[in-house]
Length: 80
Image 1 (cartoon, rainbow, N blue to C red):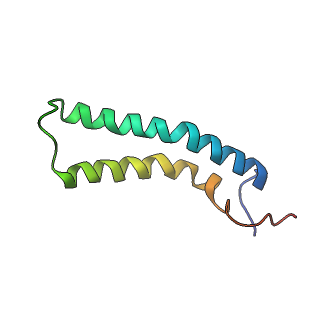
Image 2: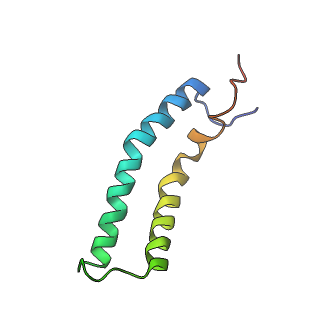
């Protein structure tokens, strides 16, 4: 597997774990904050399609920069 990233598989596995343990809670807080900013009244919930679009959009924005870290994590080490 020819990888364009300069991180070893072991380093990418460690970074992916850190990203999931730190980045995922940050994503959750950010997505709830965005929804609260758009709809501040707790009784006025947005339509489900709007809420789903916001969660999907923020999820893509969150994961896209880390794509190179997660690529090939579940595969065997090619250097071994």
